[in-house]
Length: 243
Image (cartoon, rainbow, N blue to C red; front, side, top):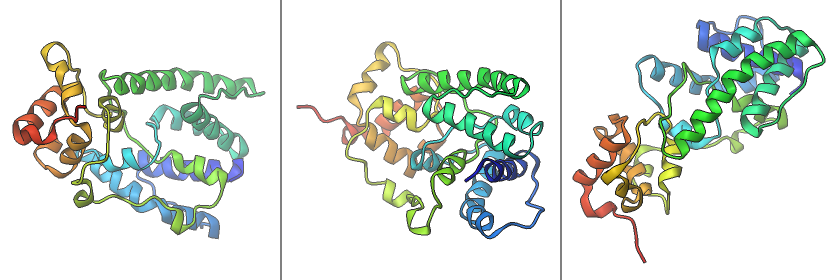
């Protein structure tokens, strides 16, 4: 996807997410194809977020990051290819850690200011993967859509499949505590003191499966109460395997 098309596509998503605007201009065949592949998912995520819920399966199905409204504010100051290049620069930094230098000093200034927010997001994500407190952003959009469509058209057979709750009831083969925290960044808190035993005692793949399938457990947003609740409800069944 070239810079101009990428900018239009990203703007369309952000206007829907932040301003509740539906696409007003007529879409080209390619634009209509891309939009039809993500519009239902974006609407579902937007509805869930408005009610304070989190669709955890989207955290697992693809790499993503919180696209903050301040990035959108900067986008509104740009047009055409500059807009698309700016969005791609944000994705490059968040997904691959690549910094982009713009020849235009004004655009570089916008990027530098947004980078302050991006660095905070990166630190929070890193902290969450190590068991620290991970705070959710204002809203999430499928930022990976720009990254993927920049590479090649997404064909229907290539689209990630959504995993049902029933399928998730079967635990994954293995998952560490760190992987669990990375998959569920909206779960806050830490395990320390006596509760640190949960890090190695629990089968975190089984915790993840029950967190998805158990409605009551799925409402818990503190890692200590989640681990304790899981242990009390499922007991020895979910204990980690030992050699």
